[in-house]
Amino acid sequence: MHAGPGTKKRMPPIRQHGSGEAALRTKPWSRRRMQDRRWTVLGLTALLMLIFTMPSTTSMWKTAAWLVPAAFALPASGSACKFDIYKHFGNLSPYFVPSNTPESLQSGTPPGCTVEKAFLVHRHGSRNPLSDEITVIDDLAYYLGNNSALFSQPQAELPDEYAFLAEGWTSSAFTTNDLSAPGRQQLFDHGVAARLQYPTLYTVEVLAGDQDRVVESAVWFMDGYYGRAANSTATLHTIAEDNATVSWITSMDTCASWSYASGGDIVAAWGAVYLPPIAARLNAVLAPAYPGVNVTAPLVHGMLYACVYGTAVSGVGSSPWCPLFLPDEIRSHEYEYDLLMRGAFGYGLPGDMGAVLGSLLVANMTAFMQRDGGANLSLNFGHDTTIDLGLTALGLAMDSEYPTEGPVNATRAWRTSNQVPFAAQMLWRGLSCSGGDGDEKRIQLLLNEANFDLGPTGCASDGFGSCSLADFVATDRVRAALNVTHGDERWDAACSV
Image (tube, helix red, strand yellow):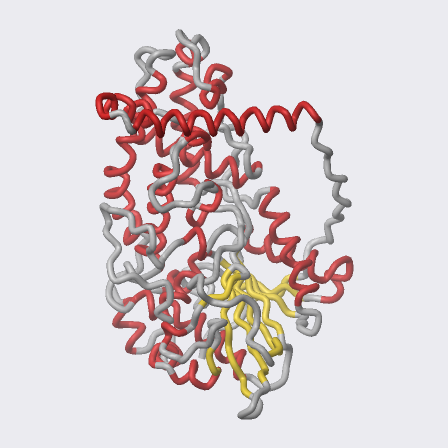
């Protein structure tokens, strides 16, 4: 019913991976420096708390606190004491393991259950900017270069976080589209981890969408999973990513009425809300050192991209742009990615389109889970969009409302940072469970190694988020997905121009 792989490709020559270096010891002066910084942070925090209690100066000092960089920013009400900026880059976040969804779920498998098969949908690893994104970053580099005389000669002492501006900054470290070094490492590590965690699961067939970063990601995973024998052991199949090839990995490509603008338009509206205040704050910080500086909203967008993609290309902590932003500003930027992905590849798509497009993934996964015999592992490589559409078809990560112009709901269900960071892993596990009522087949979803409750699909889930496979398949959402075929009446209703 659903299209299978197109061409077979033998894998490129295996890459050689050297051993890691021994961990560096912390030098005494480094420890003292870290201790001094802790006392500085504690002292500044205590001072700000004291100042905020003084009625006559509240307004003045709130303005001063507004200028404090992210490294010293007070946490927002109800937030954790430590804000990890790198877990809030939306679908451009470096890979991390989030909390279970909901957090009340227990981790692992239910008692008496073992994993007997698994269907993996793996996103490609961290990459360089896309062509439209690199333009925004290049515009920032052009502004700095065109005003090098201004930025190289500050008229006042700059806060430490901004000192790099006087030394100059360019966008020369970026290419377009290509997988980055952190991306390669993510996939290799995941391949090794999969082989170690599931030693009884195995396959010699791998499927990837035929786009360079996806194919390369699959190869790096295979290097880690199969090792030196990968070339002679496994076969990498590819399926075209175009508007002529039906594929569950890129189902939107053959939907005539699908448009990226479904997400892009609302991102522009949100940008008009959250970017100008950041520009105003940065201009206030920089004005004493750089009279006449003019940081605009588009330049702020370039700075945020430079932070996010600097991390994607060179690793956590490498971008000088990240420390410039306050936690709430990063949260607002994160919401931009959430709006984009939900609008173009989720519940924001018109009518029934999101569920229809995601149904192809659900149908392929369910068929694998119900199949008797054959390999007990399915390895598939695609995009963040692949995973997001699959969640949409099942009614997972759904919100009752998602305002385009805010306010940002801190407890929203659709969070691309948690769902589809770079190298995201949607792992469907088939469980064989024994109990008082006899043996039972169950299904469980791990999203980036965290348990994800399947109850919202309509099945009765347990404390680990798993459901009876029979109950899962019998839910209205899954039955609807299984009844969609490319070009049928429901497909045409959603995709006809």
